[in-house]
Image (cartoon, rainbow, N blue to C red; front, top):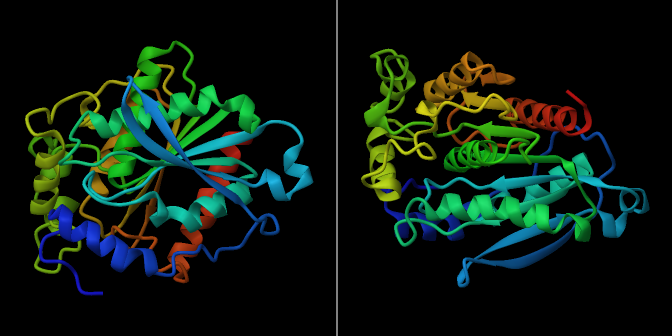
Length: 318
């Protein structure tokens, strides 16, 4: 594929996403619970604060399945990765369709605005507004307001964590039932606690080697582009934010050979220490982009567990 010289070069990476990433075979191939259901897809503009606009892609299995058309459905809101500076919801197109079919859910895939043109807090505000939009349009899509989950990959995991924090801080009864974070970014490197910054930690072991898939120096540049002078903001370095006691349940997946592994583990411990129902899954021997090789056994197992976790969270009272 030919890695770019600098992952933090947003223009180069945006072009690479369109030229390379969107052409990769990303369709999940893990065992399915249900027969595959065709999914209708709509791209819908979302406007707030008078003239602020982004879009969402809505994946709805109801149009093709009479069983799904009856009754209320769960909803899953997805935030793509890309270091806050690149990436597209289409990167997760196959995954969104997979989730819609397997969860019998409405999936809302968010095309939030990107830095540096739109630095913090704009991407996070877009993602939070996508939650508002989902709630406001629940009747239209027959969404059960008690069964809304959010999902984020990498920097999208950071955004999902921020949305969950903001929602639980501003509402005594959170609108989000469950949060699923995959290889999430949780803390600016300058604010790493000792568990994340020690010599044996993943940020040093995997982020400073010559073969680093995700160099620590790149993460520092991406953070600078995203937050500039606000690295310690509660909705940026979420690892240092105390969650309300009514924060929703969380499932965190980390990759064993990922620069971000230990900050994901640290966030799971942080949430648990504050009484939040938190599950941690560590996938040994895999790099940050665990979804690039869908036929690998580890990827199949990861995807099966994603469905198990989300099905349990969305269909069980706890």
